[in-house]
Length: 239
Image (cartoon, rainbow, N blue to C red):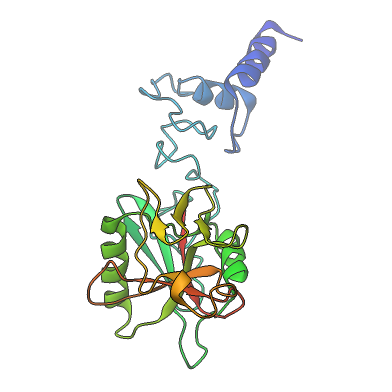
């Protein structure tokens, strides 16, 4: 092995070529280590998000899931750095919106069956299939107001939409997927957020209604409703 290729191999191993297909190992190593093949500098923050793609080629070097060739997700962003947004399309009647750079997907159910109507578990799975972390976590008054406003923009009705939270594991203890308990035995847990229309304990079917849904009202703060998890509704996803 010549000294030149031995050096290049070490550069490739230690610097990493990421997911971009360079024509040769020399170019790959140069870009990965902060130097363009033409001798120019790659600039500060060579790979700030750790996705293996040099900052000079990455259209969003602060987001590890954004790089040339990445999966294009329906999220109001250009994920694959080709200059187009959501060119792969979105699921029927699912609309992406951004709140403080975080993407949400509103999949609005309708009586005509034009949009997906899924169970709570089915909605969780659909969010994952669409490239999201899961159902939206509505854990603050500010987010509650924002969600209500977006639903007012998207629909004039009051659809029920699944979001994150259930007491399936322990009756009366409502928990989100991150393990946060936000409601326990009739009261909001300290530091958490809950906005029940009527408290889940007050329902005669409380033992059967184990998943939380969202319904827009004119005044946020009364938007959570406990329902049976096998009911089928629209849903809100969060990345």
